[in-house]
Image (tube, rainbow, N blue to C red; front, side):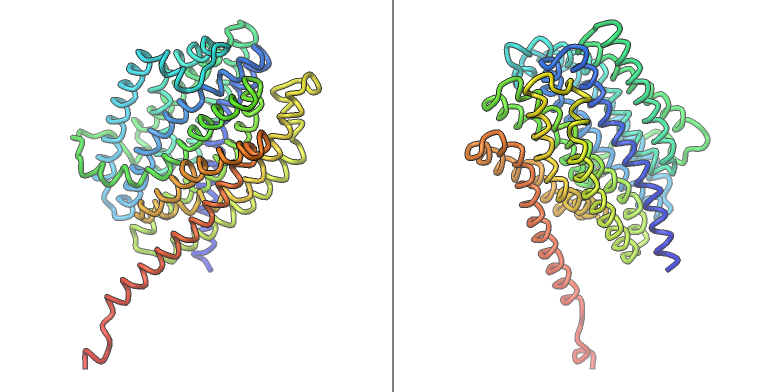
Amino acid sequence: MKQSKSLKKDLIRYVIPTVMSLWVFTLYSMVDGIFVARGAGELALASVNISIPYINFIFALSLIFSVGASTMISISFGRGDKEKANRIFSMNTIVLVIAAVTMAVLSLILLPQLANFLGATDATRGMVMEYLRYILLFSPCYIISYSFEILVKVDGYPQLATKTVILGALTNCVLDYLFVIVWKQGVAGAAIATGLSQMLTVLVYLKHFLGKKSKLSFVKCRPRLSVYRSMIPLGLSDGFTELSSGIVIFMFNHVVLSVAGDQGVACYTIAAYVNSLVVMTMVGVSQGMQPLVGFHYGKEDRKACRSLYRYALIAVLLLSAASFAVVNLFAGGIVSLFLEEGSSQIFAEAVGAVKLFSFSFLVVGYNVVTAGYYAATERPTQSLIISVGRGLVLLAASLFPMAYFFGINGIWLATLVSESACLLLVFAVGRVSSRRKNLRNAQNTIPLSQNS
């Protein structure tokens, strides 16, 4: 009983700051959208949404390396190998810096092609390129800030992560107001405000890791391919979960454009912001669970791992129901943050879109947490199957037929269809995994008659 209570407290201690951190990361984009919609109009809001898949790609790159590093560092701490933990931490940071700078330079060179690929139209191309140009200049800060936010929790300071992300969010809000509303800088101002706030969080995290309190520290090291062969598969699940948000927006933008035009994209943008906030809540529970599961897995305490997984599932089921209820009760108020109530037909369309989207909230948490649990217990294949199925294959398989047969309402319900299909996939993967485990146990058991 004592261990059960301790595990619950540990999970709450890690999940709450993780969820709050991811909320704030999501709110960075939402605040941009709110100020842009209020200060520059619906078309500018659509332009920001067209750019968002690239930002999701930036975060996904950071997650692939950092969640894998987080799991390996947690296991190393569980085994008492601090030297290995520091090497992994240092290698992860070096590689991310190099990747971030390289990606930013290449993207700036190919900016017009990037804007067209993301779905910019004649009406939005100029604003999409303007927004992306400044986002790219600050993209190394995005990547390193997100990585440090994950690793500072593994270091044992989840509250610092929460405080730092909140500081960045408040800074972003103030700068958004100044750049977009006061100084009338439009989408460029929104991008600059977000970039500066990300830079601030990097500096705060660096101060911690360079200080005496940190268990993790930078050490001299050489990147080893063997480390990345283990690290990258462990982070792919969470990376694809983040990337799937961008892929979802990318596909939805193109389909909505074909059905309802630029105004439809603006309407979808609001629904996507709400959906992203809920999905990140589930991801936060998963990420909060993973370091604890990794630690107990390193200690070979399988019972504790299963208990943590069960508690995480209960948490997401409660959060899913709460999210569904809140969105349906306050859909009008949520949309009014972006658009003036009753000002146009798009307001009513956005309210309907948000409500239909909310049905998928009832399913998504189970899928995300299960994928995270498999990753934390060094089963990246199962984790990756669920994440890719949920974020890419099943969504594409549902979105296009739903749009074709049911029009705009079918588009809003496509996520529910794909998440429900993924739930069946999760059960199938779990059954196959259990059968393989039972088979291995049977093969390792020698009958007593053979020992007589």
